[in-house]
Each structure stands twice: as structure tokens, then as C-alpha cells.
Length: 123
Image (tube, helix red, strand yellow):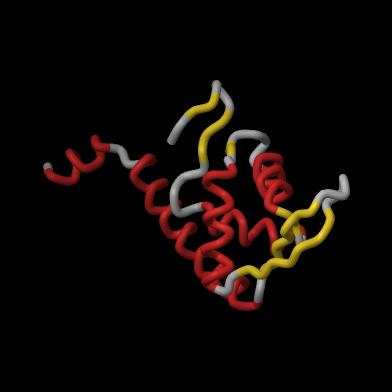
């Protein structure tokens, strides 16, 4: 994970789908820049999304049928592609959430593991 100063980190590979789907599910239709800014905002500026990461992921997610897009005008009246979560995307979000929770609880067990307790069990 790259660090951007003391406070920013790139999104871990594999979590971007979950973050984008959750953002669209919670906040509704957004353009790519809005998705990136909301993820940074919700993470309290710990996570950083760059265009080279986000837009290929959005394209792939659209090809998979998890999101749809349409052209429109942004708040400053510029042409922008707006993304929405689909029914398939909501199903994927449920699956990704479950997988993330399982992985997070597994990693938490490793972080909480006390090697001394294993030595005591062997005795």
C-alpha cells in the first residue's frame, strides 16, 4: 500500500469494487470524480483514489453488469458519465461485504494472537 504523506493510502487491491458499490448503493448516482471524492471523504481522507485506478475499475464493473452509466452534465455543467448500481451490483455488494467481513475477522484473529498462549498449550 502506497503512502501519500502521513494520512493517505491507495485503496488495497480487491477492495475497490466493494467501496464503489457501497458508495453508489448508499448515495445513488454519481460521476467518477464524485465517487472518488466520496470514498476519500467517508474514509476521512485516509484512502486516495486516482483516475488510473478508478476508471478502469468502473469500466470493468459496467462490463460485469454491476453498474450502469449514462452521460449527463455535472454541477459545473461539464459533460460527465454518471454511474448507478444495478440489481446484479447489489447482489455482488452483499457477496463482497460477506467476503470482506470474513477476511477482516480472520486477520483480526492473527493480530490478536498471543504466541505465549500457544507455548502454554504445548506444555
